[in-house]
Amino acid sequence: MISGKTKLTGFFAKPASHSLSPLMHNLAFSHWGIDAVYLAFEVDQTNLRQAVESIRTLDMLGVNVSMPNKTAVLAYLDQLSPEAELIGAVNTIVHQEQRLIGYNTDGMGFVRSVNETGHPIKNQKIVVLGAGGAAKAIVVQMALEGAQEITIYKRLNATFLPLKEYFVKVSEKTGCPIRLHDYADESQLALDLSQANLLINATDIGMGSKKDQLPIADVKLLHSQLAVFDLIYSPSETRLIQEAKKMGIKAYNGLGMLIHQGAIAFELWTHREMPVQNIREQLEQEV
Image (cartoon, rainbow, N blue to C red):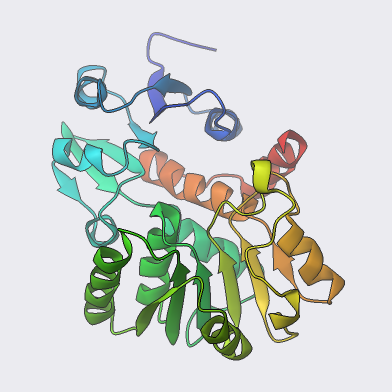
């Protein structure tokens, strides 16, 4: 029940109405009997400054932010967590005594989801397909978690060289070797996959109009010592996951990352653990 003391949390993105976060967080509030509500708000860079200031004005617990606000929001915050500073993007804001602190829980959420499956990150050789915002977050966190080496593949375009320089800096700060290669270099990809422990698809290949496509040219590059993680959760099984499972390879979708990045945000706001298993059962019905 909404009361005069109900606290507000929310989601600042555009579009926002598709988000599963309201369902996830409101179920968690209900589970703990916390007098709070989570709502989705259409916010982009035309009204982001006012929206962020409303966190203080309305005494909100905090918010999640997503595209197109993850980088633009940095200008309006008082403090960044170490991982948010390294990633250069924020997906969670915590309101603490009139100060707004930015965190990035994407990478931590992914690592938790991997650990949940029984696969380690530490001392592993990892191949990442794609170098967008989610990929940057998980690469930074995996480097902080002690990955042996991380190799990233992206298309050769105007962002390639700036990203290459960025990952060199991350490598220097974390001590983890990180290399960026052209997605079109199939022979190098084949070599890296043959030695890899984890393959992560952080592209959109496998969803929407690309749902029947594969992010690698030849599924025979997959092998039994490899675990496959696809950040896509709708559909629940991309073609990559289907092909991996046919070969007896363990493969997982992105629902675990979605839940765990939300769970970390919930913990930051409430100092309570999100009931992850209950949430998973509900979200599986939605996707």
